[in-house]
Length: 545
Ligand code: ADP
Picture 1 (cartoon, rainbow, N blue to C red):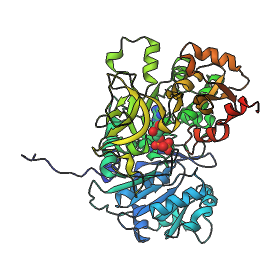
Picture 2 (tube, rainbow, N blue to C red; picture 1 turned 180 degrees about the vertical axis):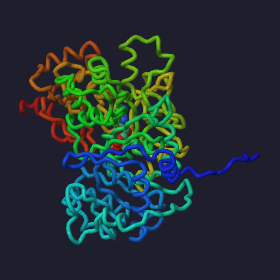
Picture 3 (cartoon, rainbow, N blue to C red; picture 1 turned 90 degrees about the vertical axis):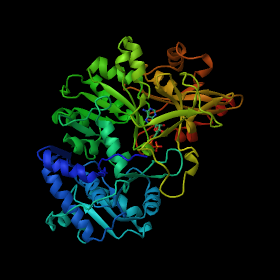
């Protein structure tokens, strides 16, 4: 091999910090506090404070590779942790504040967290599990909603005691930077250990014009929690480009988010579909209440964005949705549903349909789908199989021993998503393998059915799941939540679906619920639906209700 004569310059987050300080000192960070006031600072403040934080953590004995955990909302200090901890050579482990204390104890022990930084408002949660995590040496409290209780380490006091002269050490780009656990929707939470290199490359891909196109002129609002899959990398993309960053703190209701989007002239916001469904419903009620002319896009992913929602935002409110697919194991973005120039000839409904797919792979992500026996399937748009991925920001194994069966001998990661791939490489998710409905041996796509149900004018949310059935083994059941003041009968819903699907795909019954149970990251929790209503059809057949 003739080796190229170029520098082996490490791809690390330290460079993001240097760049932010050198070029973007006046870029703004706006962070909403628990009392709803806005805290404003700049990247110059941020640069100083990340150095102070690194000094303080070093003084507390944090060593390279050790895990520093955060139990925090999306706010400025969490952003400081995002950069100070990895850049000093340690690993930031983001704890999911919506998990059960028992799960948090398991995860914090599994991660071997040595320090936990916690919002004062979340101290009651921490106190429920900290006793079960003996390896934690220090708890640092962020005074988010009031002063830090006596006897506790105070984040602000720790920083104030430091000069901010920290020199970040040179790092190997392959060293670990961040540890994120999957939320355990399908089994025990598993740790995914991002490296500096993987974060840098994922950031570059997110900033490309043909992906999210994040740049200095943007004001980004990650509504997606910073404790979940690194807020889809948006904090990194913001720091990297000098974009303004707006952080919502604990206020995630639709009106508060719309206030923030309008007030801070947000250009790009990101979150899961359940969140956007609420925002769309509110905009439909009060279409002129917010000035959203600054918004150039809304990134939606984490579960399937219903086509009706994408259309509703664009046609009724002039707001453009970009639908993306990903998972924690891909840090998380893997594909994006953007129509390409070659799709210009498509009619409006075909374009919307394309934008409701999971899209095509980002550069450096390779996707294929395989049969039960591991045979690679044709990209014909109809054959269903399990999606597999590989690339520089795809996990090569989990942190710990779990989940070895998710990695194939020939170097691919098994996503657990059941999909079709078409000739252009567009992915369409029909289900997660755990949620698949197998009726008489044939697969029925719950995702396709619920998308169609959510296009009914009376339906706010719908989740389709497998109900046990004496004859067919499983049959689809639909859980439906109506918009306020609206209803529809099962017959009307069935009639709405019947034009689009084969008769045997239609749900056997409709359950009208006040709310669909959600996972800790806001996705529909189908395991709970199956637990509570899985026997509905058997009971109905027996004449019980
Ligand atoms: P968890 O497994 O805890 O839900 P993740 O947040 O990493 O953790 O979820 C990844 C999964 O979310 C994917 O495997 C896929 O099933 C689902 N998902 C993510 N984005 C989309 C999307 N755009 N459309 C459909 N499903 C999606």
